[in-house]
Image (tube, rainbow, N blue to C red; front, side):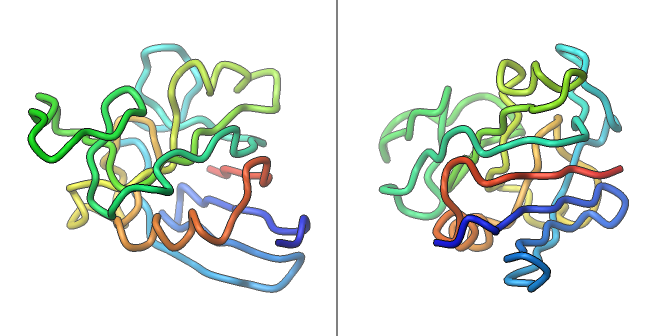
Length: 152
């Protein structure tokens, strides 16, 4: 995979684009935080700035797999009592700017969701939600370390 690939996320447009240099590879609708933009611990806001994908999790699981604490649940495991399920794949973000350096510790991911009907509107609890099929496709197109920019 070429190292000139970058992920760009526009909060205003609720869109994620994957580019190779100036060439558009893919574009997907997303859902960022319903609480707005911010970097404070516990704020449930989506951070902005420069990031990298620190870790890719779930590549060996079926689409629709539910994760709890980044561990895939088995088919008979109870579903966590939350509306904000992390599903299918996890791209764990690490902040590269001083103001977003706590991103990894805030557990901010790009991930799949059971709320695919809300994709395209701010509805998450800080993460960047994608349709499950879209996050599976994106996961396979990027490597750990790929630069990510989240813009207001």
